[in-house]
Length: 299
Image 1 (tube, rainbow, N blue to C red):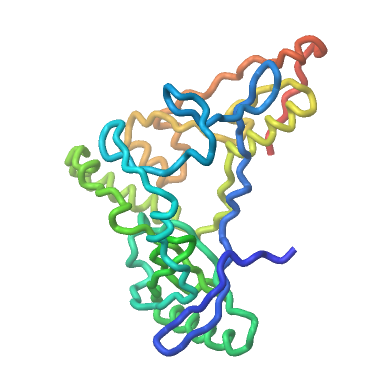
Image 2 (image 1 turned 135 degrees about the horizontal axis):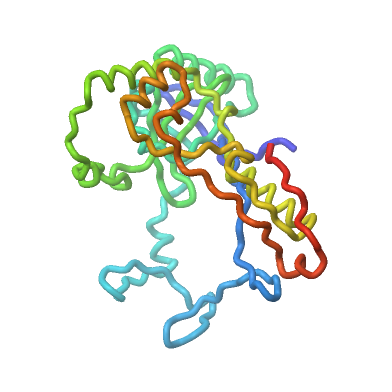
C-alpha cells in the first residue's frame, strides 16, 4: 500500500514555485504500548472526566482554559479559539539559508520526507533546489501553517529527495546556563585528555543506525511472547540479553590507558551484574505448570 501524504502544497524559492508532498519520516507506531489493566478481571482501565465536587461531566459541558493563578483559570470558548487559528498555508517560502551544521540540535523537533508533486515541471524544479542545497551545504528556513498553528521548518537535501524538519521556537527551548552552572569547574589532566582524544579517534566511524538495537524493546517482545505461550516468565540475565554492566571505574587514568590499548576496561574496575531472579508464575500458571520452562537466550 503506497504511503499517504501528510501534507500537500508548494515550496517557493523567490520566483520558483514547485508542488511538493510531505510524508512522515518516523514510525511512531512501532513502540509496544503498555496499557493499564484491572488485575482480577483482565479488563482495560478507562478514565472518566470528572470535576471535583461535581462528579462526571458531559463532553458538551467541557471547554478549554489556561491556569493564570492557583486554581484560577481563563476560560476560552471554541469560537474564540477558532478566530485566532491560522489558515493552513499551502506554500512554504524559503526566506533564509544557513550552513548545514549551524542550527542547535535542541531546536529540531520532527522530520518529514519531501517529494515533488507528480508532474515533470515540479520534478525539475525540485532537483534544482535539492542540488543547490546539497552543493552549498545549506539549509533553507521558512514557515508552514497546519492545523491552525504555524511552525518553523528547515529544508535540506536528503538522498534523492528533501528532508523537512519542524523546529521549536526560541521560547520553547530551556536555557542551559541555570542547569550547567552547578557543574564544578574542573581542569582536566592533560595526559588523561590526550588518552581520551586517542580513544575517541579510535572509536570514530561513520554513523550506522542499524548497529544500535533497543535491548528493552527486544526483552519486552520476548516477555510478551513467552507469557502468551506459557503464562510463565523466566528472567534472563544481562549477559544473556547482551547488555553489559556499566561498571564503577576506580582508576580513570588506568581505564583510559587500557581502553586505548584495546584491553578490557573491566581491569580498571568491574561493575555489579544483576542477579538472576527466580522464575515467577502468574496465578493461572501456578495451578497448571509444575516447573518453569527452560530459559532461552534473546537474540
